[in-house]
Length: 135
Image (cartoon, helix red, strand yellow):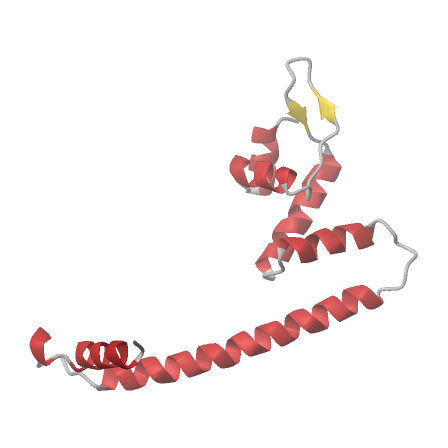
């Protein structure tokens, strides 16, 4: 199948497929007589695997490592477990940062009511004051 069909069957854009090829996450070995790349069912499976990994917010290098590990089915899965543990820790850190961001935004929002003018806006005044502090 050509790239357009692969895109339809995986709900992935042609540009994304080309990008994954450029990043060597998805490989094609066959070409048509017109020099078009041809894909098989294995490409569909691999692309769906990549999409699932991206939905889990895994980086391209992590996905590349998982694809490499998948080619050694008899090996121990220590590296996969370690990678997931590290990724979980990164997610935990981001969650903590987002909780702090939410607190800050709520404090900022409470500094202004809708009854004020732009000149009196507590949010803009606070942001302006913070901007001068950070110089």
